[in-house]
Length: 237
Image (cartoon, rainbow, N blue to C red; front, side, top):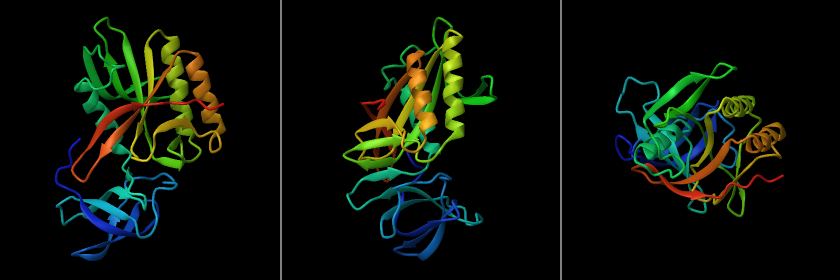
C-alpha cells in the first residue's frame, strides 16, 4: 500500500484526547495532527520519538496532517493507523502473497455477516463457492524479546469477532483470524491474556473449533506499508 505522497518526518510532543497529537515539524514548527488510532497505543508513543505524517494537501481540513508512523528509540517503525491493515492485507491477497488464501474466485471488503450484526473485513469466495471470512487485526504492542500481543486493551468488539468466526466454521465455511504486525520489532504474536483474558480464551476455543489463525509482518517506510513474511503465532496458555 503506497501512500499518496511520501510521509514527512516530525518530532512527537504528545498524544492526547485519543484523536490528537502535537508534533514539531522541521519547517512548520509545532502543530497538531490527527491521530487515526482510538486505542490505547500502549508502548507505541513517547515524547521525542520521530512521527511520520501524511499531508492531506487540503488546507480546509481542521487538521491537515495525519499521523501514520512512529519510530521508537530502537529504530523500530510502528504503523499506528489501524485502518491501513485491511488495505495492506486486501492488496496482498490480490497479489497472491498470502499462501493460505490462494483460491480466489471473488473478493470483497466490509461485508455484513453473523448473528451479532458484524462486518467481516475481507470475504473471499473460492472456486467451489465456499466462503472464506478473514478478520484482520493490527498488532503494535511489543513488550519484550520480539514478543507481540493483541489486544492492547480489553476488546469486547474483538471478542465478538471471534465468536462470529467460530460460527462461520460451524456453518461449513472457512474462517481466518489474521494478525497483521505493524511493528518492525515484533517477531511473533500471542493473545494478550494478561490484558484481556476473555479474548485469549476465545482464541483457544476458535483454534479448537477450526478457525485458522495466522500472522504476517510488514515492511514499513515513509513511502509504503506492504506485507512481508509469515511469522509465528503462539497461543500461550
